[in-house]
Image (cartoon, rainbow, N blue to C red; front, side):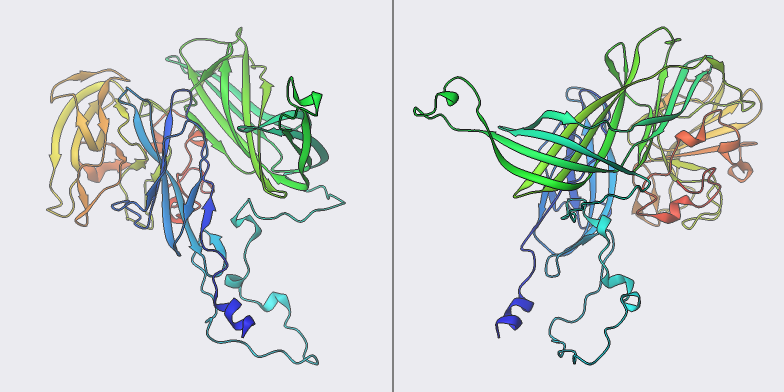
Length: 482
């Protein structure tokens, strides 16, 4: 009876999760929103604003959830959102992962296996019943005495001491993290200078961690009278999985990354500057975060400075006539061509939310308005079309607003409007994005792939959310793996 009762009780009564994201720069605040609706029409919970690049939330119901970060700079019109993906929590079975897992019927209590029967090989167990170790990086990590050299694993043991007061801080760090710069591009694009940095770092670090606290004041212990007497309260020996983010610093001033990607073992950071910075001080500041389980959960936050030696400034070589249609690099949610969502998709959807839209080249505005040609259920919303000096046209669709009129002359980089979500698709409201097209003539039937005409490094423009939505990688994606 006791075993039956234990079988029916849930493993978890609630689950605390710890979403993280890459910081956008100084001055930003972030709010986490979690919803059971992919369109976020109803919100399950919202966290308090934070300036950190991570937060926590407690989930108390078994369900599939969607999460995003709303970001903004107080007292400014800068705001937006970053989709963090989906996850599924099953409290009854203690499961936390990206996909829904079907578990056996709890009411059917299996009969004991006779001792003379051979056990079923583990390779025959269906994949959906095997929990992947990477589903929750906070999970208990087996302690090891021997560490194998594997890609993304630093086999050297790091000795780390922490002091836990109001917060936990590093007081001793004997750990040379092997951050390697693999490629630097320093290019002159005439209107601006770009700096692109790629590299690798270890995802897993073998750690020997000690946690200290200050002993409380005692009249009978003079060592507590005039400061902190550290006493050892917790330890951890094993692997630590780290999450990284980084910002470029110019003369000790943090720069806002125009594009970035931080994967498990590799990273990419891009910045743009108005002039040559080759004689200035440049470095990357990496922020590392991990959480491991000793007697209690142990937070590790540490920063590492990596000096950057700039190569010789080179002239960017491009025969492409146009520049990027937004004032900063933003990833793609749907590429041009035949995709799983639309065939053909006549342009590229950039995941822009209320961002500044700019002209890709010199030209004249030939049409503006609100597109309703698809009827009540399929509308393009507010749009602007520009005819360029080489005869090609560019179209900017689903705008929140525009600040030009027919006949206006534009220069490359001229302000056109703000990206938005006006219009509808199959009678449903749209998510925020910029639908952008390049055309040989005015008609949308003359659409051509913008990748072939925009003079940018497309390796710096990733596909947003492709791990949650692999179909986004399709179409005329110049890098089909990301």
